[in-house]
Image (tube, rainbow, N blue to C red; front, side):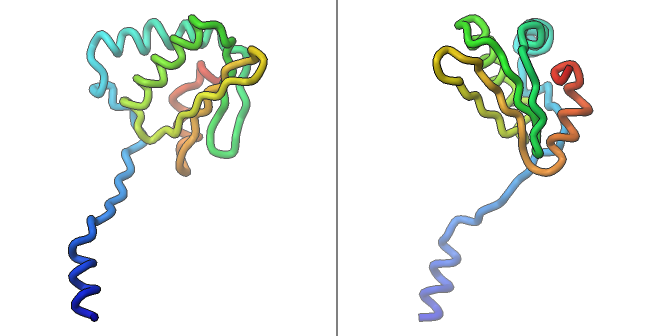
Length: 123
């Protein structure tokens, strides 16, 4: 029986937990994606942001739920998860046409990273 358990343990895939560093990997985006992400989408979304809510492990940012803003936000999220894979990002739509809320959070240290790196988003 012990041999069978040992054999099963050897066949089981090893679960390796990798945590990326708290740093933006801008090389994860093409030059055109970087321009779109940082020079177009970021400023446009910050201009229409309607609120910020501080959380224990990150922040929630509120936006209008019109199609243009939602499209920009989802494009931004898709790119952000590539350059900052340590973020836990969720997008929530409030009922009855209410706001769209993006939550940026993650493991310990994530909130400090957001505060240091994303200051204009929090104003």
